[in-house]
Image 1 (cartoon, rainbow, N blue to C red):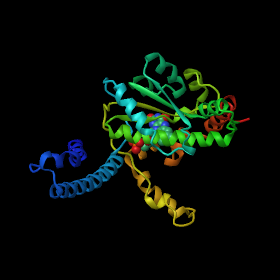
Image 2 (image 1 turned 90 degrees about the vertical axis):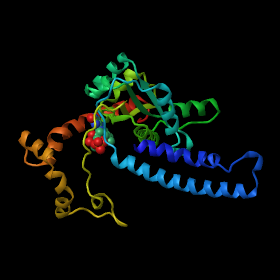
Image 3 (image 1 turned 60 degrees about the horizontal axis):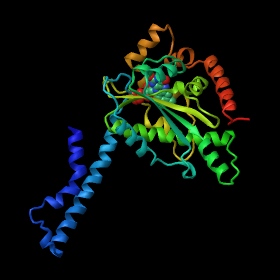
Length: 301
Ligand SMILES: Cc1cc2nc3c(=O)[nH]c(=O)nc-3n(C[C@H](O)[C@H](O)[C@H](O)COP(=O)(O)O)c2cc1C
């Protein structure tokens, strides 16, 4: 229903003036032009008001989708979204990213182990791998008598920032188009596996992956921390134990989270994260692998 309203308001400013019964090309005069202009301005204004609130609605109702129908993601639609996402901000207007589109069963099977065999990698119609890419810019410089100095950590950070901004803009557009998607953080856990599967050359490094398809589920929305826990007024406010109690009370009280704690024989929800989901041992090992892959790709000498 929201989509029908959206389409109506989107096209209304363009159609309405011409559908006016007074409108005849042969009698177009100043009076008519004034009427036209007034209507156009009014409806354009209402369109933008509606459009911005629709965008807020889209963001505030979104959720990660991990199960997809068998319907394909039409190549023309995907190409359009990938093109539109390039409107995002980018360092020096250089677009320091590349996207590898994986649709084939073999391609997805090759990626799956690097993503710890998360089922959506092979089940989703499309997997996108978004890479920090200084290779194309470096090649451009080399072809134009310019001396590129982008084989370093700062350049990687700039390209990674570009790639993640592009990724998020794409996510907004894809969700707005009705697609469901899941961000795969495993991309930076086993980068070498992805580099090998996608044949990524030097100065190209995977930083994000998305599984995409038409939603086959509508899971409940997840919780979020309160505003005051992450917004600081003028200077950083280090949270006291009492602040922590307040910020995390709702999350810790959720029945699902209490059940996780119980079935894993833990004392607190935080222990689920530190002892099971994201452990020190894993983080240190994966950090070592990450640095090694950065070195191999020429970003970290
Ligand atoms: C950096 C990052 C890594 C993530 N990695 C995974 C992942 O590997 N597997 C997965 O199922 N979801 C992953 N997600 C999705 C999160 O689990 C999800 O965004 C979070 O639980 C909040 O749920 P929501 O997106 O429905 O609001 C990741 C999200 C981000 C931003």
